[in-house]
Image (cartoon, rainbow, N blue to C red; front, side, top):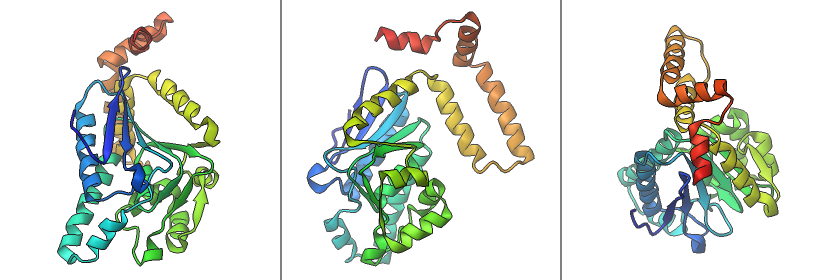
Length: 268
């Protein structure tokens, strides 16, 4: 496993990967090095066939305070082309996380400011503490949430994205759930138990079927009905029905037994 200095990648025997933002002394603020290491870690996760899904988390009190101050000071001295290269690397991270073949779940506590909202929005699902604090803070320092904006709009809608990007208001986990940024929010003392419950639920599912469903839904997008999309969905169900896990799942259902992926889980 690659050694990282700003992130940590843990993979347990069940195939659950946890990718940690690991700069707790800096409130997990990200810089160019963290962006590069997150991309490297996602490449490792994508290539590891034993992994069933990915949790994105932050060490310490906060998920992430957004961009690192020293990194922002450095960017202020760079010319347009150098800043463009920086932004392209951040965009590569967001798009890679968004299109990762594995299901992704963000877990949020403490602060999630600026680009951290992009990371959360790029995940398939997110849960968090009710007292977590969210903010699209860029306009307060003369910037715009440019690279992350498509993903934030997908997560919370165009109207809400305009409000919070233009006002830089803070909102808590309860509001984040109302907006759709979080699937669920929990009291801080029960968040850890909720994480375990989500993991247990995901482990019930066919790894192959979850990946196929994610690929399918990325293709479906907003659900515009076209002849090409109809053909895609017809082929998608035919392919998965004849796949090994599709066959096992159907046989297990008809035989009224647990499928092999659940039995293997109980044996570990």
